Length: 531
Image 1 (cartoon, one colour):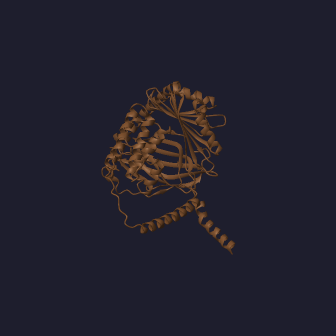
Image 2 (cartoon, one colour; image 1 turned 135 degrees about the vertical axis):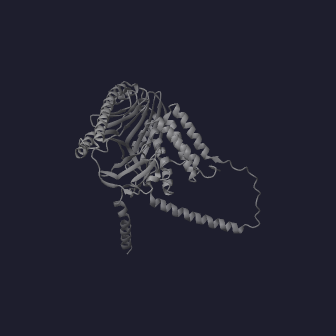
Image 3 (cartoon, one colour; image 1 turned 90 degrees about the horizontal axis):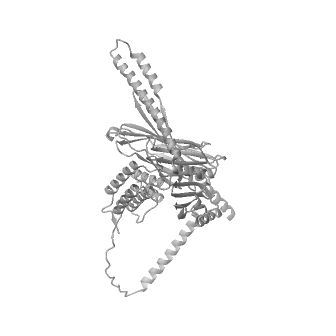
């Protein structure tokens, strides 16, 4: 009889757990498909993400923006793809996207795709989103759009590609359209013939301007590429990668002139493993580059011989962690290294290091928490509850036995000093500006990220500085993810630059500081002070 009930119990448990296992996946949603912003406002959107797997999911995110420039029948499409690794934790989280700003009326199309591996590649895609800029939001108050939910399907065998910028000119189609219009409306005696002649002139003028700009861009491209190849830092990285057997396969440069612009360089070895190199040139000098790879490339000679670094690497290997990806922020005299490892269950570990002038100045190992054992957690909870009830009964018994208890007079104590977290956040923003001016970009973005975490942590009633992940969960639970979307997007941008996954930009940094400072000054509880 007992065996029979045990079997029924196991079947019941399996019936409860099976649907949740089969339904495991990544879902990205959007409350609307159209977003409206006024001129000069930074367009940031928060997309809720649900991960129903039992572990964190590592994959690749592709964020695409498509902008159109139009003049007299000619359309220029600018497609920008940003591709980078992304990890979604178990449960609910938020994906923050920043589409910049505009001072003219225009619309930007947003596309989001996430690919990860289970037994086969899985591709998650979200319906196209549209961002509209205009002079006044009241013009769009009657506009409504429905929410969107991602769909999942078979992944792309070649992955989601690399960072890229593409230009597509539809001049020929525009001229064909003009020709059709004139064929139906033009005649020598027509009152609109002068207008059509002017249209022909405008089209020819714009085509000439585009041809001239294309030729100038090609000239900039050639000179920029020559200056890039001659840069000491790029040559140093080329030599280091060549030792590992990696040689440049392709380059994607986007110059504004001969000495300024951004670049992405792709390196491969004979086994088709890939290393990405990203950076920018300013005034003919490349201040630093970000190196990203999913293969075990060398992490500078000083680290390869450092006892602490080697000890941590051996410890991870003994615990069955496999090296997953490497980020390095490199200058001529320093290297900031972040190596990600994954266990067999997908739990990450982060081996971080810093090298200055050939000397290892920092080595640290951060281990993520393992998957929660809910059965053990439940048993411990029951034990703790029983202990608490026993302690309460003992306390009540002792209290009833005590009579004539006199209270000792507590000496007067000074009132606790109040912590002004608002002032602290503003001071950190000031320090960040000083660090950026002195070209200490990593420290500058780190200070901005700290200012955001301190302010939002205390605003939410937590009297300590939360981590990025903890803050995302708290804001999502309090339904504040959307209202704080722009601030959280800034924090994620700071983290990218801090760990060599993003590039600093003086204009964006100044705008970000102004926005955060205004936010901190305008949004706080009472005086912004807590004991």
